[in-house]
Amino acid sequence: MLELLFLLLPVAAAYGWFMGRNSVKHKELKGRASITRNLSSGLNFLLTDQEDKAIEQLLELLDIEAATIETYLALANLFRRKGDWDKAIRIHEKLHQLKLPKPQAQQIQFELAKDYFSAGLYDRAEKLLVTLVKSPSLGEAALKQLFSIFIATHEWSKAKQYSAAVDATNSRSLRIAQANMQIEAQKQSSDTNITLIAELAERYPAAIRPKYELAQQAIQVNEKALAKSALLYIAEHKPQWAADILPLLQQCNLAGEEWYQLLSHLANKHNNITATVLLAAWLSEHGSATAAEQFLLDKLTQQPSIRLFQQLLQIRQQQSAPAAEVLSSVKELVNAYLDKKSLYGCRNCGFKTRKHYWLCPSCQQWETVEPVGGIDGR
Image 1: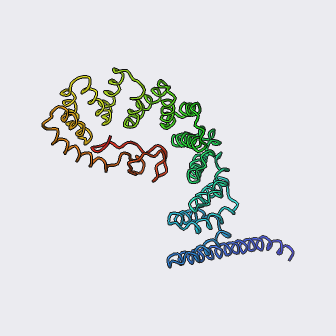
Image 2: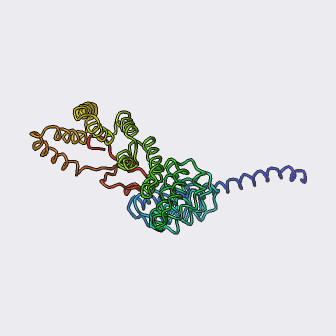
């Protein structure tokens, strides 16, 4: 009998293991069924436009199951895009309370900061972003979001404390933003320092504004050589800005041949309208009106432009007194047409304006608003 009991022990153990396993499976299945019911209920609320109830129902699942976080992130981002920032914030705040792996926790923190920014809660957003600046994966994005806050609040001086972090990235746009905001900080304090602007121009060669501001300041204090150097750098690396820099270069006492070579380079290699107009005027003054007229006719054949036609009218007015009155009427019509055209356009979002902005009012990007080209451009 005792031997029989020993033989039955393995059977009893096996039975106990089998029943225990089934019990665990039963609990798992019950838990999953509960999650499925809650999820289905939440989705039904969404489909029937009962979003508040849907959020409450779905957030309850976070206490049970954190494996579906990507779904919640997608839902919160959808609310943010729709402008329902309070709903996005509630979801992200709930996610932020969970104990998650660091990369996932930081991503949720970054999304919550974007919610706060969208809702105008800049101080809360900044507090979250500051701790993400050193993150290997999110550092650059956090810096860009921080700079968006400084732009919104006009706290330009705050950008300077992140100079080292910006230099550690490969972001060209961040360097341009850093240079512009430091210049804005100087203007805000009414302490424009030509030495500091020169340092910014050297430190951030991708940015146009430091060199442009440096040239303007240098002209005011009669340092024409410094202004000339800065403007020629822009002409070489950003020829599309010729419409704005050539009038400044005319104040820098360029030698006749040097001025001619610069205009020829911009007009013939880069097809710049302003340079072509100024070159035609130079030819008319130093050569002959006939040569200037032929030059413009050739250019108009290759590159139709209202402004080149305007210059051609002016030269023909000077050549022919009898035709001057008729041409004057045509010129007035052309001038009226051009007076309504945009002078600048944002290469990033397409915003058009007659006034120049260093920061695009539409897409909030620095140095993307440039002189317009094309048939109506400069």
